[in-house]
Amino acid sequence: MRQGIQTNFPHEELKEYGCYFFDLCRWAELALGISLTNDQIINFFDIFKAQGFMEDDAFVINPVGVLNILCDGLRRFRSVRKTVEKPNEETYVVYLKKPGHSHFVLSHKGEVWDSLDPERPGVKDYRVDSYRVII
Image 1: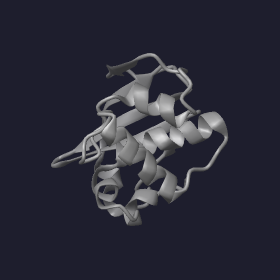
Image 2: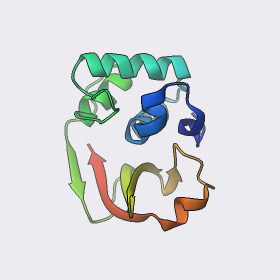
Image 3: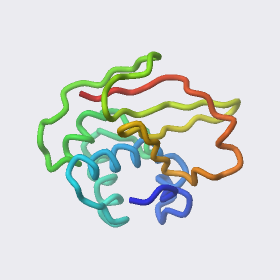
């Protein structure tokens, strides 16, 4: 998946609210060495909503379950924890905030992957609020 995929994504809820979900999809791509298509991403979203892992507005209720299913149903991950301290893990999700907005990005081996255009004007105003570590 390319950075910025969310900006013009052909599914309204994911386009508007899907940043955490896109981060989990990208994490699975990195873990498995694959590339998900738009159709696969939408199909997974529908499956996760039906299973109660996500809400209609793309709010991720069960990130561990989502990531495990994205990773071919393997039980690689067991728990998620929120921390304000920068994690030592190779891969984690970063929760960013600025007045009136929040956004999630993925950090992998020190590089940030953003589902929105990383060159967009408002990106510089975000500050790290917390981290999501899934192990």
